Image 1 (cartoon, helix red, strand yellow):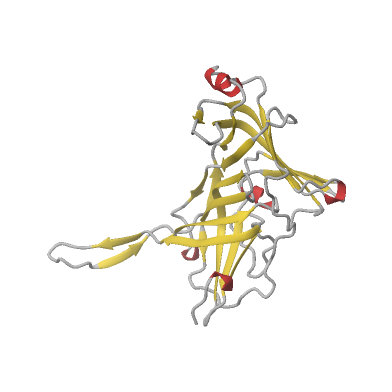
Image 2: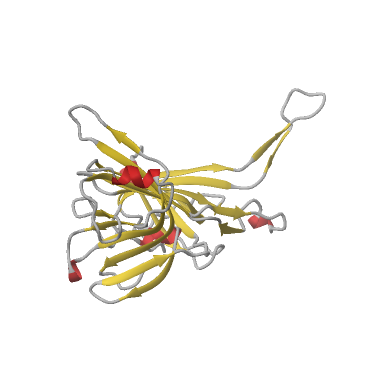
Length: 319
């Protein structure tokens, strides 16, 4: 039987440490709503060996295991930020405020994906870490996320037992830009923003070793973070010379905070929101569009030195 992606599922769970995988069927999180999953490209680092006195390949050998995969989803729940930052607090009830800040700790995850076909295929990707995550929104569209990830280990054979209770999004609030804001400084809403993009890269690298057991041969043994790269851009209609002058100043602006807030527009127990507050702005590029019959806009790429993420919802504890 041939099937399409509607016969597939993907879910993930945070590992207690780098090497301990989440058990099959025990995932607790969905990336968000409207998920699209691109299964991993795996590389067993195969070496092809020849020899003197022959034109033929004589043997194959294998080195370290590596895998990359990606996920696209509509922004709804905030739990994925654990890939990049560290949870600092969850407080209050109806609603609860969750706060993440920079962290030196690598949070590894197990991703499980299954396909319901003649011989069901269930694969667990262990020791997963983020390569980069992008959040982007524009007029009359949902806010979309794209994540690129690495996997440090997987089983030698695929499983055949599908999860009978696949995790679904626990917020079910697909954010659009209707109630969203881009603010500079925080609290001062920029007018007529057409689109925005935020890129987060924790620069996580795997650590391999030559002193592993047979069952661990070729797999990542640990991981570490490098510099947290925070960058993005926003495009807005041209009103005056403010942004041109800020870029040309060749210095960090006095109003050096930028906040991107996604919300359902609710208040109190009805609020569902996620805000990204960046401080220490670097403005080194500027672009603009003057097209006849179209809105005149300018695009402001930025780099930030720090970021804090705050989410408000009715989930009392991060799953």
